[in-house]
Image 1 (tube, helix red, strand yellow):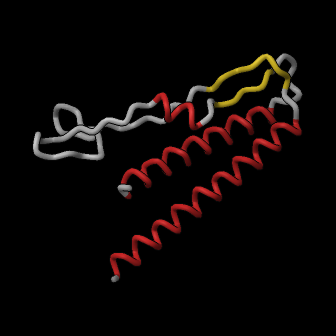
Image 2 (image 1 turned 180 degrees about the vertical axis):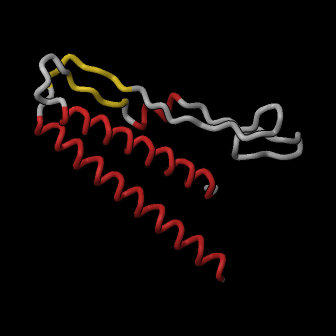
Length: 126
């Protein structure tokens, strides 16, 4: 597996987790607002399956892991995650469970990246 892909995937997942945490915090902040309904972000697996990974190059002889426009400049990948609204009222216990799950997922992702980074450094030092 290419390290650039792993680090890029971890970065996208961290961005998704951070945006999901913001939505959960918004739900908790508006729990007493009349007529406010629960919001959430689509699961990361669904988002990644819907996203096509494509490679492009600055030269026909080269491949790049970063998409380039016609002028050779890197195209920024905006992580605009779609916030979905439901008809369900906000339940504090469910939002706290979501927040705990987000925290565990972020810790797991960080641990995987740290382990991969240590492994990569060990191979370079050898």
